[in-house]
Length: 257
Ligand SMILES: NC(=O)c1ccc[n+]([C@@H]2O[C@H](COP(=O)([O-])OP(=O)(O)OC[C@H]3O[C@@H](n4cnc5c(N)ncnc54)[C@H](OP(=O)(O)O)[C@@H]3O)[C@@H](O)[C@H]2O)c1
Image (cartoon, rainbow, N blue to C red; front, top):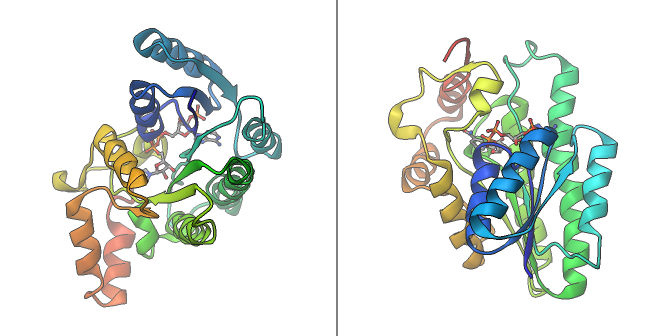
């Protein structure tokens, strides 16, 4: 029996991971804050794919929420073979417009929770000599883009470093860095998406399919679209100031969609 635990499993990229992994026969532990939505999704995946789907309600902005997921990851009787640290959100506004408490909540969910859950999972996986972790970062990791970009840069660097440290143990880690994906993310943050060109939008199911292929190939970094790979390559040739200006405005306007 192969089991995957997905954080932020009720919407967007996390829900796409849940669908794709259920399709591949994984049993699932679905976690997020909204219990009713989690149960609806668990029932749907069980009915469609015949897999077991457990629900774990946890707010990863709290110590209790993180501890509850850590505990599940450490259960030896029901081991988790694949952890997807996906839960995340955007804050409305630029630096000094966002209350510092909201920035700290972002660091808790994007960095502290990812560190603690990755550690709980990989410690158990190393004992068993196999397992995988996908940490969902963003292409924002490579651009000057406030606390959001900085938190995703941390996720990317941390994951690539840990992957190197655990090489040869049977445990794989991969940072997933998608560009703009059509999910609930922008609406939840109250961000307008009008200024984001159509070509920049990715489909969550395709992002996940590429990510799982990259994980199987043993990659520590997945940038799941040739357009974004080209964009990242080109960005290395652009002066930092120009990059900072462009990055700080694209997709960061606030208001109706
Ligand atoms: N969409 C994009 O353009 C994009 C691009 C690159 C990277 N990403 C990253 O992809 C990941 C998923 O984002 P998405 O676009 O799929 O967003 P989404 O559609 O808004 O889904 C976010 C998920 O995270 C959960 N979540 C949010 N805050 C949480 C908390 N404090 N504790 C536990 N769960 C929480 C939500 O469920 P509940 O509300 O029920 O908790 C939901 O299941 C994030 O890490 C995001 O930074 C997104």
